[in-house]
Image 1 (cartoon, rainbow, N blue to C red):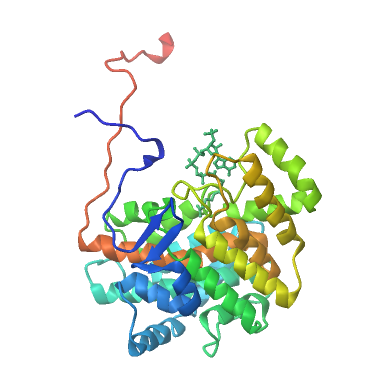
Image 2 (cartoon, rainbow, N blue to C red):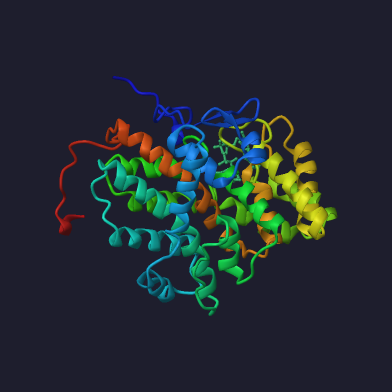
Length: 377
Ligand code: ACO
């Protein structure tokens, strides 16, 4: 049967899914049919996670139970803390996160993925423990002690507390919560697909999430948010934006935080994140990075006119995290803390009708070559 080869599988459906949908022409993103703008205004990260996992908004009792379950699974075993302590301090936090998540699977029985109850607890552990692992590595690698989680703090308050040893102000915690909603899910992206390929072999959920973390790390996916902030720092001031961008484009380089396989207009998440920047900087003083970013968006619109290349989710998120005092290398791990919700929702969905991923290839090599003995080559 003849096959059309689509590089990057662009436009090739890899699954049927009812979890999220993107209209890339109109800039609309929905989780389980609900617009992401509505969720950012009215929901919380935990409620949105429940929605993604189970397909509908939870009742108050269901949300309370889920929230309690997550709170009670925030701690990580001292052996995981010891493992994180042994990792090189100059390593990338995404590698530390991937290693710790793979190790988590060795402590919890999750091999039988047909056990729905066990799968629920695996999901709870992963969502609850990712922030603790990320915060532990952030502190341990700079020589500070690991701060165990506090049960009396919300999900986002607790994460910021575990990183900085200070309970954050309400606005920072609320802002982070909206950031997590925006990063929680995004249809068939590279990290979700990587996890689904692993899940299709019926591997345990810790291995599935470790696969997704590996794919998220790359600069063409989640890693772009780090590069955006590095780029804005390198540019330095709004006046230097035009020559910088002209040089980059002349050298055929990509502008980080711009462009998307699906969105042909500004990513709706970038619009919401920009609104969060405006709100946070009005209360806490502006960020020089933000002023440069706004100019990058303005000049890019001119230089990339006609190419449908606009800011994506990674463009404004790093500026917010930077203002919250989070180190650049921890931006992508925060993305993972949120996206684990989507990865697990796809895992649940796939297990209901699993089929091993085993795509085809177009062989372009030779056939029937003779084996030449080494002395004759
Ligand atoms: N800067 C400048 N030009 C761009 C950019 C960009 N960021 N993105 C795309 N273009 C241009 C390309 O040069 C190309 O132009 P051409 O047709 O004249 O050659 C055209 O737009 C199409 O670009 P492709 O790279 O073919 O589009 P693709 O769908 O494969 O790429 C991608 C999408 C990988 C995200 C790309 O836009 C990119 O590399 N962006 C920068 C990295 C980034 O921000 N990644 C985060 C994406 S969001 C996420 O994963 C969470």
